Length: 240
Image (cartoon, rainbow, N blue to C red; front, side, top):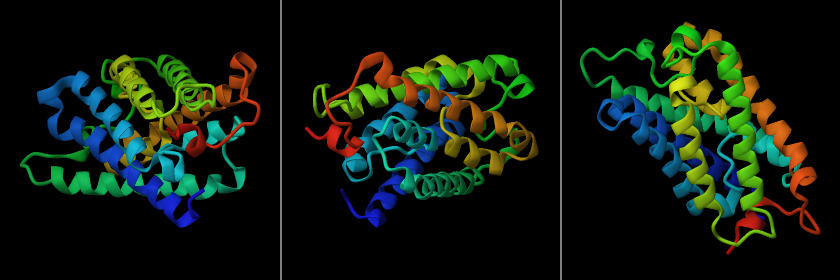
């Protein structure tokens, strides 16, 4: 296992890339590529950084993932606070860079959305709170099932980043119209901080619902699908 300093650096850069690549595509090129392009951008960020630094930190890039894999006994609980804090800092740093870039054009205002998550009037297609909660819980749970399954010691080695990146793409294809897709509290925090009060008021949903989904998957994966003889870390399970 890599030293903690290196693991946190990997989590910082991975989460930074996820927000800059995914939210950056939505903010800077959303009109050109549409929500399908944004969905693939998010998937590609995770795929590329999972291959680049996943072997260092496990490639979480998401507090919900860290909590889920901890409950599945794939990660040491004592390291959760450091991982989560680093992910939030990395996401916020990326949002600050994105804000600086986007401010270079006339008429830009982060209060117009800035790829923030929302429900009701702030949902891309006006979905109600209960719809958003269901989507975020279920999709985060399935994201964790994919992560835990792809990194299971019984799974083919070396393909986990591909499966995880494609799963995130699919999740965004489903839920961008519903909530602008969170499944990641760090990503939601970073955009809300710049988008303003409306996004901050609704932020609680995108902190709570993804964590609930991750908890459900983390505690039930072994029950549904069994496990290897000894649970191992994501780093070890992802090695080719």
